[in-house]
Structure formats: structure tokens, C-alpha cells
Amino acid sequence: MLMRVGKCLAMTFALGLVACGGFPTTHPDPAKNNPTTYKIDFKDCAQSYPETPDGVYLKRRISCMELKGWK
Image (cartoon, rainbow, N blue to C red):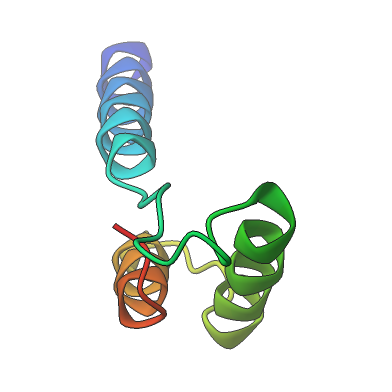
């Protein structure tokens, strides 16, 4: 049982690292490439795609940011 929990935690941690590493951080438009605009766009995507137990929301948030022009 303890081994199973450990594997689950390890997989969750690995998924978190991969998902967080893939978030877009730069915008090609210099006027929008600033922390304030990034936070506004990220908050909008986070509200559009709330957290789910399966983690699909991360991929959707990344896609949302890419649709807004972030790379």
C-alpha cells in the first residue's frame, strides 16, 4: 500500500514538472510582453479551466495561453 502511494506521488510530481515547464512565458508583441499582461491572461485562462483531479486543465490552460499569443 505504501509503495503504491509513493508511486502515485512520484507520478504526480513528474507530471507537475513537465506541465509547469511547458507554460508559455513570452509574447511576440513587445507591448504585451510584460508581467502584468501575463498575469491577466493567465488568470483568465485559470478561470476558464478550473483544476480537475485528472490534470487535463493544465494542457487546456497552456493551449489558452498560446491562443492569446504567448509562446
